Every structure is written in structure tokens, then in C-alpha cells.
Length: 500
Image (cartoon, rainbow, N blue to C red; front, side, top):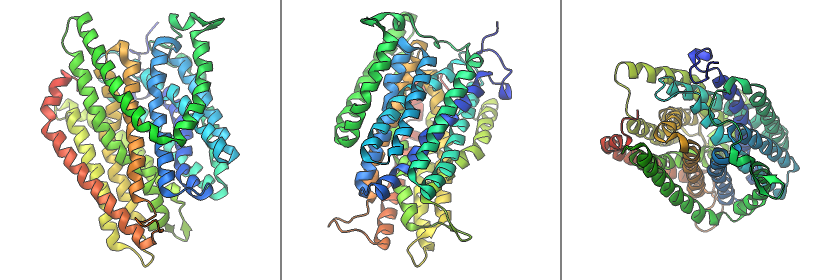
């Protein structure tokens, strides 16, 4: 029987299982982004939170969402297998969305907890399955991950249009309910299409997972029940988000040490000297990733509030909901994603494909330039101190092209730099960098809060000045960081030992 790592009968010559995973992930992202796109406005407008408090809650929630895959990846590697982990995550996420329908703070926090734990099982492990569809050094891998990334953004596009519109027009609870239905669709597709990706390694529950660990319960059953007890812990951490300063820093140090130790062990077992260096390189890329996404994730907080207050969103007599402005990013991803996918293949054939460090640097340059666009937008503000909608269009355009230089390449890079035996944990570590970025992004967003130093609410004019000052500062800092990465390009490539 042919293995999925060698079949080419799928979309564009890719493994057949890629499209099943594509649509499963698409609907999971519809669920996640549907909730995320409404969250800040829900906190500010329905629960009457201040800008700074809403940004910190948002940062804590999204930070925990991306930290959870560390646990989810490790549990799948050792006990659950990737298929069961993804299905468990999907069920928990659907439950979390439907809990949000209650419309009060307590149910919201419980629902957010379920979404966090569920995402931990789903997100890292479905990406790992994609990586395992390909054999080592398969030239289709980068293109496959870029196609997969387009699926992520189709889900995000549907969420930031349908869910955003429904939520702001008819009530936030209807938007959250629609997002929950999307998650159920993703679960159905993943299960129904299980034969398509059946050749990927590590899908089944491991032998350790079948062993009895707690009375009559085996490890898989104990982990499943134990996962429910993590939900109230998330509830507490979102409310007391200052604890995350220490937790995320501790996790980063712990996972970094674990990665280096895993690299040293792999070097000894294989009698080579490459894996430790590759793990060090991956840690450096995690730090770069944190920088990029802490700024990029202003989309859900400061850029959404900026759109709500200081952007003229009128289009032929219709006012675009503020949350819907987030749709520009996934729209541009879908528009340019296939072009970038083909571009990397063409550049590789002619020997002009930039190194991974340079791709990261170019992505950060575009992100920085996107924030600096707001300085141009101010020159065209109206009498209500609102900048044209085109300002956000160009902000998100540059942020998106920057993202395409970095994010799908990053997912592929993790699967290349990490040993096979450590791949799930390494993918979880990669998502830890997103966790730290989202949490730091929430803290950055507080700098644009709607109150001055004296505690008085800012006027629309004062708010515009504050937004543009903070955004331009972010832009200049990002350009400086990109220059540093370009300078360090060759030392980073040396650590990667031939990974491209």
C-alpha cells in the first residue's frame, strides 16, 4: 500500500491528506478568529472594560491559547497520538464557544478556558500531521505548508467577515455561536477524512497511552479528564494575568533547555554534531518570532480600537463594522498566498531563494513599514480626526506580505530543524513563541489606551495623536531589529547546518 508521504495524487501534486487537514484547520480557524475578532469590542462595549484592561485580558487569553500547544504536543507525542489529540481539542473548543453564549463574564472566562485547552491539543498536532505527510527533504514541503496556511486564512477571512458582521449587527452571542458551529464542521471533516492522512506517522494512541495509570483509567482517559481541570486554571490566569509574566518566562527557559538537551542526545545517538546547533538556531528564531507577532497582533486590540474611533469606515453610505477591518489580513493572504508559494519554488530552482534568516528580516521590514503608513494617513484625516480607510488597507497589506515571508516558512522550518522524535514538542515550543508574543502584544496595546496620564478620557483628536506616536515608534524599532538580523544572517545559517 502506498504511503501518504510518497503519493502525489492530491491537490497540485501534494499528498492526498493535505486537503483534509486544510479544511479541518480552516474551520478551526473560523472558530478561533470568530471569537478573537469580537473579543476586544465585546470586552469594551458589552462588559464595559477599559482599553488597558481589555487589552491585557485579550493578551492573556491569546497568550495562553498559544502556550497550550506545548502541553498538547507533548501529550500527543507520548500518549495520545496525533489523531485523538486533534479530536479532543476540537470538542473542547466547540464547548468553549457555546459557553460564550451566556453573555456574562463568568461564562465567558470558562468558555475561554475551554478554548485555550482545546486549542492546545488541536493546533500543534494538526500542523505536525501536515509535516509528517512528507518524507525528509521533500521539495513539496514549503509549498504544502503555504497551501495549508491559505486554509488557515480562508477560515480567518470567513470569521472576520461573517462572524464579525453577525456579532456586531445582531449581538455578540450570535457571532460566538456561529464560530462554534464552524468548529463542529472542522471536527466532522477531520474524522470523516481520516483515511486520507492515515499514512502519517504517530497518529495512533501510543503504548504508554494504553497503560493503566490511575485505577481503571489508562493514560489517555486520565489525560482527557485531567484536561477539564485545566479550564478553571485558565480562568484564574486570565483574571490574574500578571502571573503570566513569570509563567511564560519560566516556560521559555524550560523549553529552551529541553530543546538543547534533546539536540545533544540526538547528536550522541546518531554520532553527528548538528542537532544541538539547530536547536540553538530554533531558539533564536523563536525570539525573532516573538518580536514579529507581538507587533503584528495589534490587529485584534489597538488596531481594532483605532479602526473603531479614528478610521472613516463609511463605504457608499454603509459603515463597515470595526471588527470587520481585520478581514484585510486574511483577504491579502488568500490573494497573495499562492503567488508566494510558487515564488519560493521558482526562486529555489534558479538559486535565488533567500535564506530563512533573510526571509524573517524582510518580513519584519514590511511589518515596520506597515505601522509607519499611519503617519501618511494622518495627513488626510477628516474634520472628525479620522484617517481614510485606505490607511488600514495599506497597513494590513504590508503586514500580510511580511507575514508571508515569515509564518508559513516558520512552520516548515520547525519540522526541518527538529529531530523526528521531538517534532511534536518542538512544534509546541514554536507556538510558545506565539504565546509570549500575544501576551507582550497585549501589553504593547495598553500604551495606546484611551486615557491620558491624569486618568481622563482622551478626545478623538488626542487619541489619534497617541495611536500614531505609538505605531510609528513600533515601526522604527522593527526596522532596526531587521537590520540586526541581516547582519547576523551568515552565523545563523551556520547554526542551521544546511537547512533551507
